[in-house]
Amino acid sequence: MYQMKPEYYTGVDFIDREHTRLFELAQETHELLYDSLLVDKSDKIVELISELINYTRTHFAHEEEYQKSINYPYITQHAAQHRQFEDRLSEIDLSSMSEDYDEQDETVQEILDFLVDWLINHILRVDMTIVKK
Ligand SMILES: [Fe+2]
Image 1 (cartoon, rainbow, N blue to C red):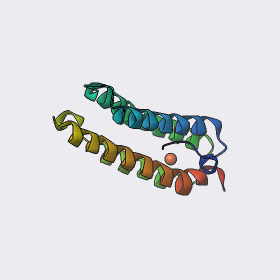
Image 2: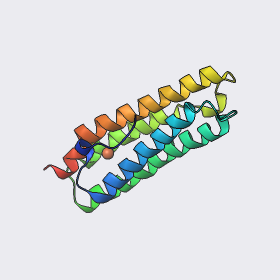
Image 3: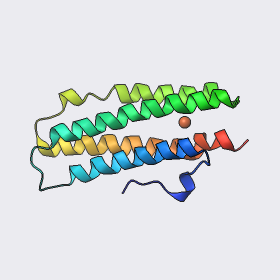
């Protein structure tokens, strides 16, 4: 469902590795969500989605450091997109998640889709400009 595809590769090794990890975390969360054999998986799901959100922030910091190091010309605009997305992510309140398992699953799936859609869009439209001059 969620995975790194050939067209997402920027050619900058560490960026591609970190993007791969983000897709892996999203996939792991998705699989856990649909694992019907596991009862009471809420804690694990919340843990994974928090890790995904935190890893996104770490990845942005790494990417921006790299942009500075190569004097990338669009750093201000690019960082603004990262900040804007971080603001959206911080609006997600995992602690107030519904007690109802179906509702919980729905919320987590929505977060996953929102995060991954943004990521793919950002990689293709914005991250690619780090390498294509
Ligand atoms: Fe980026």
